[in-house]
Length: 192
Image (cartoon, rainbow, N blue to C red; front, side, top):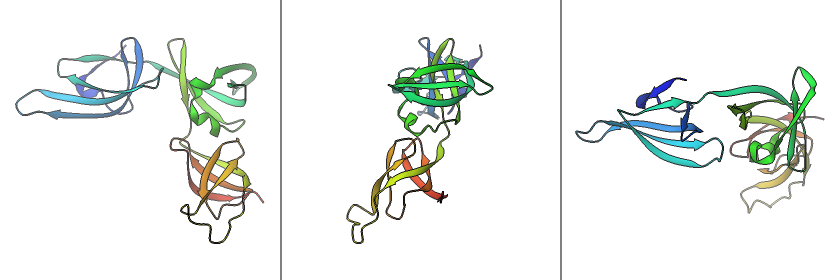
């Protein structure tokens, strides 16, 4: 396994601390007056989701985490379990619990391909596209003069998720959603 110097601990790297995998969310190398440089980082635990800040000094080295990823085809979810199969062999099915998938799971569409991340033998999460295109299945019509809330309304998407969108979005339209912020980004078209 590769060892990283303090200055190599940069954004999007995976490291091992106390036997657990962490993702580097942010890093900044700086020097305080006459002292040696320090790398101030923000880390996210890939198992618990906890975010913490940690500084690494010049003399410190840290182990790079070996995160394996494999493609999986999403099938459906049932009672808090998300079911997947191998994209090349649909008979190889397996499930992952809701807590591994996280809140972004509500934007998973049947038959979409995602990456499942694992550390050693343990599945630690999924890598989904940041933006997905989903069909609006329920949208109340816009009422003239009803812009007191900033001109948004709640709609239901084909996956069952509910988000806020501008008033002009109608039922049957395809919209692009940011899965990280859970926000509407743009209208793509309609399925009429």
